[in-house]
Length: 397
Ligand code: C5P
Image 1 (cartoon, rainbow, N blue to C red):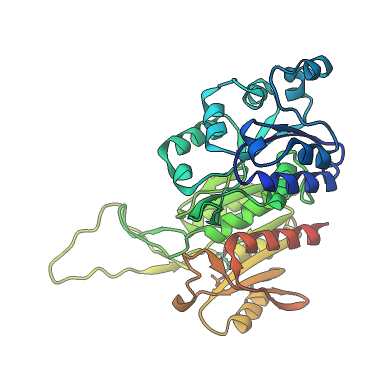
Image 2: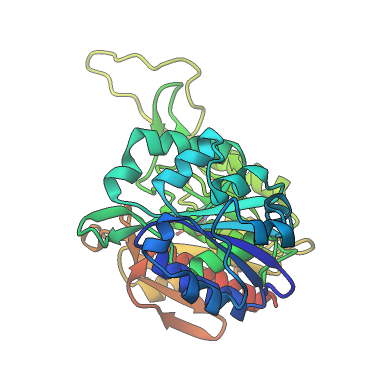
């Protein structure tokens, strides 16, 4: 996947530096050449010897190194790479990057490079959540710096929360995506996500409890595999993923128009919880309360976006995937829905309140295809997104 690519890997000084060793191994497995750079603090966590032994080349450590300068100056070193990856990106390195400091080899390379930069932040949860770190990250994102992670979970410092560095496999996938590589390179995939809001009047609307988390996870995973993703989203609770083209809509009618405008696509995933009904003749002015009289809302049926695209004939995406959120008889309803809507796959899940799935971080799904039904174990919505993206890549191969 990364044959012939040259990665400048800057290893910062944090406990997650041990994962940088595994990352080197995995990048090399994918065919990349890795040129490692260690900050002084990183040497407290991993040794130059283990890093250079795994990379198979000398490790760069000092800004004022006459031998290294004679062989390849640091400016050239920063530009000979196809991508610069910083893992772990500590709070200190992130702050230096945001401030444009260049007082050691790592920060100088980051300031001098003309290549894209991908950072894998790793730090204590309080340090991650600190306004200074979040401010620095916002600066870096605005500068076009790519990020992978951090993940949430138990941390080496004994606390729990966001701040764990992304796993080596995720860093490799993000590296491939940053280089425009991956099994979905050259493919266009459309994803709908989030709820829709159907206005009653200018200030009131009908909505549902979808957070948009699963749709965002699917879109992120598709982009990580190299796809060009158009992400059509209703007003969701979670932010859209980085690296996708976002089209924000509010109503089902707007979502259908946005989907049609985004076609053609190689595959389309309809993860949105589209309202089945809208208010017929929504009031142009705020409806007034009238003593003793309740307003009657007349409903009209919304267009079925999934069915419209699945049955469009010419120009239909090769793979059309729907979601089925059910509260009972999940498999029977999902299979019937697959047939009725004319889509290729249905990702079915049980959203009864007891499961905690709607609005939660985990999901239990059954994938219904032409070949039958497959139960997936309970896993995070991110993991469901990655597994589904992988299957989509296989189907389009
Ligand atoms: O019919 P139901 O809402 O259960 O079907 C769910 C699937 O259909 C989801 O993939 C959803 O995104 C899609 N859908 C749609 N347009 C609608 C209703 C549902 O695309 N109006």
